[in-house]
Image (cartoon, rainbow, N blue to C red; front, side):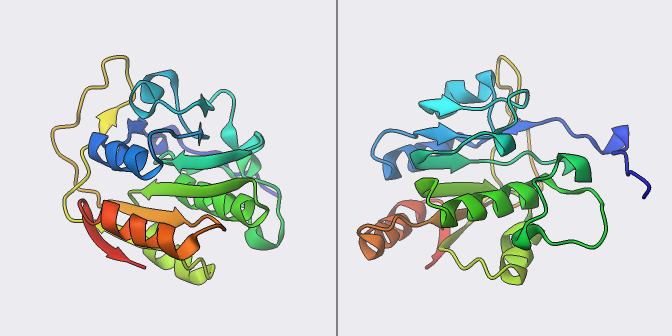
Length: 199
């Protein structure tokens, strides 16, 4: 079988979450994010997660044991040989690169169903992943669609903000097993400040 190598031109610069999304998420989690599995030293200056994994540590291969998880997946493609092992959720007939946001969302869902984290917020900028992939995989979660284009920053020491972005913003909530209805109602209340919620 021919191995597909990701073309250099498809590798994108990584970005950091919008401050308003981080602020609402921190408030929603009552002041503390336990784990950010797809982060960096620069990004965590804003996120302030208790634990985080850098690209070098590769959060896809690390344990995610945590109470409150926040995830903003990278916006590039992942070659087939860097994707998680082919279990039922990842069943595929061809080996090809996939959207990193899709791979990370699939992995988050798999780990959530294994109770590796209690509740989680996933911020996405891919409409394809947030709307179509979730339907294809029967991932039915509370969703907030941001009313404004997200204010992303470049993942650099000074976190310079992008002047404008054309991407959309989506927030998925993996509900906790305790007080589920109450937490979903709180999700709707908090994140309605940023956009329209569907629960």
